[in-house]
Image 1 (cartoon, rainbow, N blue to C red):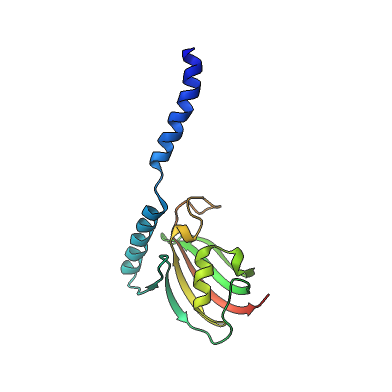
Image 2: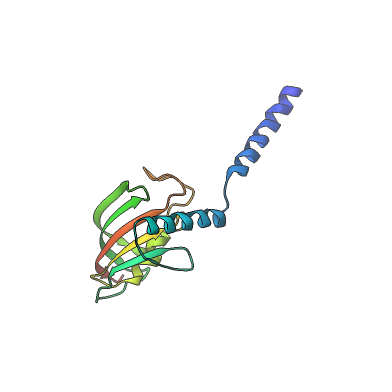
Length: 152
């Protein structure tokens, strides 16, 4: 009887122990913003920020169309972690609404021909899910050149 009892109680205990280690989304955002601000200070960068926690530096505003969520964006970009590890660098055409929220919020800040540097807190990136070589709760940095905007 004790063995059966332990088989039911032990998994519940392990689940509750795991939940205690988890950080709420709002706490993780505070951590991410501190990391972004530290990075900006250490690299002598000045960025603007949005209410969601996205930080950005507009390198070139551009002069063409502005992307909407329904647009296909032709971009040349490099994505990296705060430690400088590059996890992606390519040119691609993508539907904006299918991308991470940091891109959905950041790309419309510039126009066709513009470029921007985005500092994306984890909740606007991949959150608490690891993706390929990106650890969970990672702040992401993207250098993005918006080459073209194609309305759908």
